[in-house]
Amino acid sequence: MSSSPPLIVVIEDEAPIRRFLRASLSVEGFDVLESTTAKEGLRAITQQHPALVLLDLGLPDADGLDIIRQVREWSALPIIVISARGEETSKIAALDAGADDYLTKPFGVGELLARARVALRHGAQRAGFEAAPARVTLGEIVIDLALRTVTKEGEEVKLTKIEFDLLAALARNVGKVVTHRQLLKEVWGPHAVQESHYVRVFMANLRKKLEADPARPQWLITEQGVGYRLKESAPG
Ligand code: CA
Image (cartoon, rainbow, N blue to C red; front, side):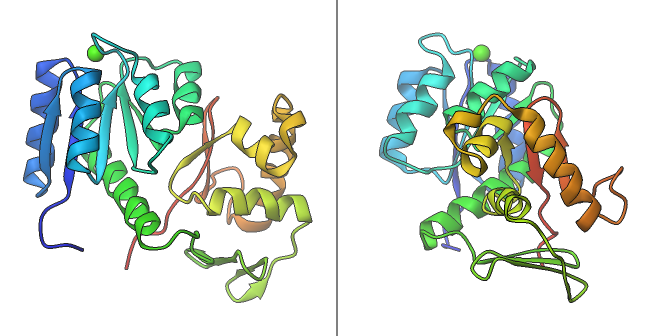
């Protein structure tokens, strides 16, 4: 960690929400820089090098999706979308464009801060070393991406190739929502992006093998209609 507090750029045209974000984030020790338009926001990102961006989609001069696409051409900077658009299609579009996460307005301070912490941790990891961590630990479950093994309470769990690839795709993005489309593309290939039932079937298998109660998954979390998220273990 550097000594100066992490800078968060907020791109949001609604003043009450900007005030809410500034108040919530300042208390936690973040520096906050507010932008009210896409143009201002992009300038802030390129000139100030923030650690995280909170981005509204409905901006007066552009759609927030355009900002995500532009930034993703040159930066892996964490971006969390904050939007009143709650429909699944909007979430999917934002995540597919390269957003790290999505919060639907209204949202609580607790959720905002938790998601911000996860995004900042990923940003720091990406900045520190290019490759994803070789090992992801979820409570008693250890996923070794380099050795392609999974253990639960020290015992090896036998997974098929597809099951492992699916788990690995989530593990490389631990804490983040991965859309059905991204999973299909990564595990089955670009021709399979419409076949979301593949993911459902294999996710059910993974839950049976890894979760204590597959009907109430603790780690392999469904983001309804959007995709899946591998829940991160509490740090420490
Ligand atoms: Ca707006």
